[in-house]
Image 1 (cartoon, helix red, strand yellow):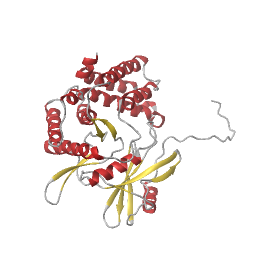
Image 2 (cartoon, rainbow, N blue to C red):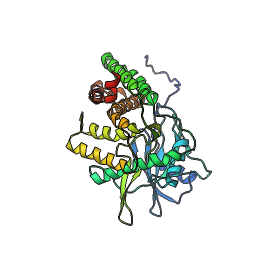
Image 3 (cartoon, helix red, strand yellow):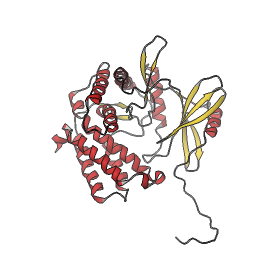
Image 4 (cartoon, rainbow, N blue to C red):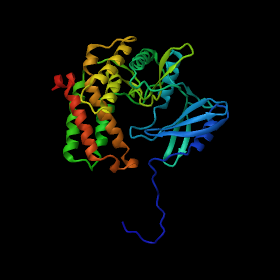
Length: 345
């Protein structure tokens, strides 16, 4: 690149901006039926940007500004319609709010393009953490969502959590990371092929998945009557898919947190409590239980593909090859425990 003193006009391509919380507060106040806003703060910048909206009367709301993810457009129509259905069926979910004009989301014209802004109820409480009873409540709440969603007949999801969405497309994003060693990318390819083959034609139960039940998208709160209940939020990755995948995401998160190839005593207790809670509401077939470790490995591949898709704004130094290798080694260990992969091999 030849750098000179000449002033040239360059068309800049912005891949990810951060919108100031005060601006989000003004947009929420203008677009949604809401009381006067006292303050708005950025809670986190992740796959999406999440803001806490504080009202003058003491109430709070959550505003989520969708990012332009590598998977494609945000799944707003399905997500909001599903949440409305689940709320009406009595499931414990963070209810969405429509705009003054009745739209499901407001549009924010950011430098990189139009982004959807959705407003939700604020949930009090804390994540289930290591409390066995709270984890049991989380499993039961997920089952309640699966059962209630059976009657959903609203707008279709943009995304189906199938082999293409969970395996093929994430693999393609990983393969674009040229700083990864060829041998590692080849290992990912072989693992992905085996995982895809293992679920092809398998007798697995289909549900409407939450898609991200890792424990951090659940708050447990106590009602006025003194009863605890687990509430779910962040349905951004929801869609029709495999029951075993939605279950496996919880186990995956606990194993990843401890860098474990299999549950230790603590994680085993949490996993059993989660399954017990789920079974208190809905059944789990043996074929789906047998698929759990397959989907633990698939979840790992999916997440690495999501990170790879963010390379244009997080930078390759934040996606080091050694980290990908370590994450792949875990994937490989989980895949080796999969009875589906063993049968397909």
